[in-house]
Image (cartoon, rainbow, N blue to C red; front, side, top):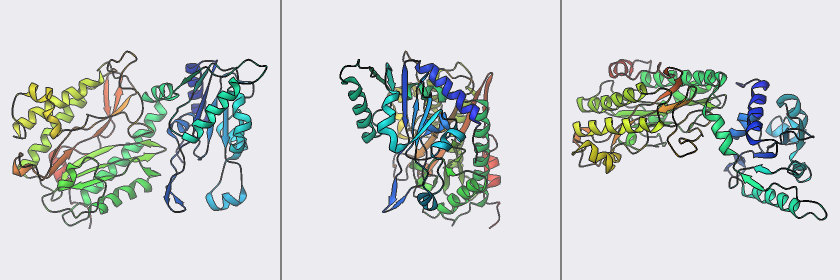
Length: 442
């Protein structure tokens, strides 16, 4: 299992406590388990914020961070040990394990929440808690606070301000530590290898899901517990659907195949997209469309450096792709007017990318506290993924481009003097891709 040292999690908690201040308390609640069918659940994915602060993976967990509290600053409420349930459902840490293995100052069972948790709310001015994620727990928090406020013969001592814990936590998560970057580098390497395998084994007549199976087998073989998101394998017109996930059609000769897939290694995500010709050779029109996206992608990536406002990346992509749409006869008119009227969105409907980390669309603000676009800083990781998508039924588009979707996505680390393309091992140059497709064994 990939994880960080206890000291790493302790340092994150200290940073969080310094940010919320000594008169505050924070409550973090685990994601609920989700039913898949009747009495079976989907594989459990822990809360990203709890993972970030503790590394703890079990459901039903509640974490309390209470700077300077006499009973403990880092408190966990976890499932109790139960030999019968552990025989059926797997091992549990229990309160003793929460302290011994995860560094909790104090730990209790979830059955003790009503009795013990309100004690950590007393005499605190601010409560950091995220409303709206768990309606039942929201009611409990409201009840605890109200009970403290209405005690007889005793000053309130209840928090007077409720603040969303995500505001601080998600800002902390935007910039990655060296340990995080190294783990993400491994996740990206595994993902790049999987994309290369898919290209090598693609040939007309294969099913989309066969390539998905090959990719996800490579993920699991190399230690990734999950795909970071539902893999997209779209051939032909399916590639023009941004989040096509059925992956059930036959790949035909002449199709361009778009694969958007990434593994999650140690709960850190990779996110790579490549587009390639199923037959091993782009048509002239397909190549023109592909090269237009590639040119825009390279230009935007090369613009990345500390201090560059995030919106400049999207502005550059819009302009580059709009110019190409005119050249490809997808649009007509002036570039400035097409951008101002957002006509480019017909074929480029999404933004240039997103933060990447524990969540594939990782958290953290894109604006500063005054509302201006946030400048890039070293140790941020983001994706750059321009695309052009021409639906098969678009009678306004040149016929040779209909039913072709192209997206090219890389994972980029902002460095002190520019950037590092973490996914550079995954080929994207037109000639390199054409040389790879179909070269794998049957």
